[in-house]
Length: 104
Image (cartoon, rainbow, N blue to C red; front, side, top):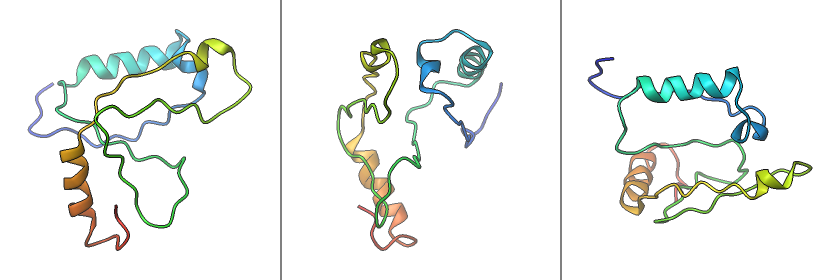
C-alpha cells in the first residue's frame, strides 16, 4: 500500500473480550495493522469521557483503564503499555484551540 499520508479511521472496539479472543473481528484488525505503514503516532478520540471541553492525555506512559465490569479476571489483568507523547499532546491542544475554547 502506497500512502502519502496516513488515513483517518473509525474503529469501533466492540466487546472488551476481543482483547483476549481470536476471531474474525480480531483477525481483521490484525490484517489492517499489517497493511498500513507503521505510524509515528496514533491519536485516539474516545466517547468514553464526558467532560466540558476537550481533554488531551499528555503522559509519557498512559495507564490502561478498565472502564467496564463483569468480565473474566484475565481481561482486567491485560495492560497495554502504549507510549505517550506530551509534545504531540500539546500540539493537539494548540490545533484544537480555535474550535474548542476549553481544549486542555
